[in-house]
Length: 155
Image (tube, rainbow, N blue to C red):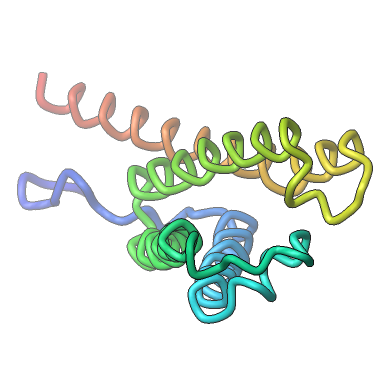
């Protein structure tokens, strides 16, 4: 079915629906959260109610907002391409970022929304880390299987 004119990096038509919809959720979350942090950091970082020196740390909040906005846009692009390599890379980015954010939250307590840290960790692992790791696995597995199949056809 595939000849010498078929591109090696063809689209995957078998992107699981759950990865697509979960990725849409993450894209929207990143775009909305990033925009909110840039526009109004005091509303987003509400666990600092008595902090008044926002102008002194605006470069940090703006950087965090741009990071979230960029991850949301990158997720949207990866979902649009539906390429296993793009899915693997963007979900790896999310997984590593979420892991770092979780470690920071557990170490400082900031961002816990007054929840017990053990409960927050469980929710974070179930809602973010496990699905992201599974999506990375899907992307990597599909890239490797296609690469192996293409290599076998050449021999």
